[in-house]
Amino acid sequence: VLTFEECKNMKFVFSGAEQLTSIETLALYSCDSLESLPVYIFPKLQSLTIANWLSTLPGWIEGAAETLQTLTIELPDLHRLPETMSRLKSLSIFAGSKQLILPSGIQHLNTLEDLLIVGCPEFCRKCKSQSGEYWPMISHITKSIVIREYKQEEEVEEEEEKEEEEEE
Image 1: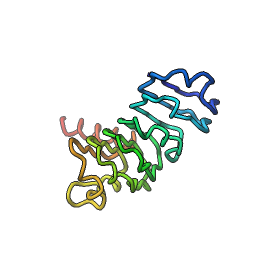
Image 2: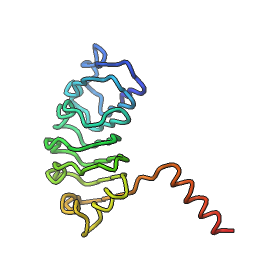
Image 3: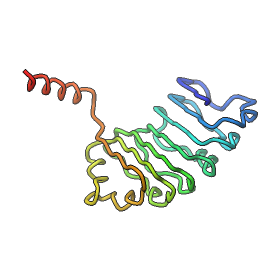
């Protein structure tokens, strides 16, 4: 496992990283300045987490397309997935954007077994089983599809207050 967290000034991965050939899990949290990461230098990479610093999925992610099985994305405005992620089994997308559009390549991910989407209410309605606009794009997923509405902290507090009032 290799994790970079809050590396705000890191533009490129450190020299010598190509010697870490056994890395299977890579997590990048709040690496605001990261311009490029040649993920192909991690030939055994199976799990990748990208969170809190990009507005779109970077092109360099395609370097892990042959080995990547689990992808977790926490990006505010995800618009596409690489269609070359042919071995992806688990995809988790966390995005609160009201403009979130289901990536068009998702229906081409034939090995996808698990999908978790946490997003705005409008987006979640589009993913609803049988009736949602996006349902035909995700209905091929074999094991589990979980879709949850993203709630602002204030909304959660309001719901908790209502529940407490009802209990009294």
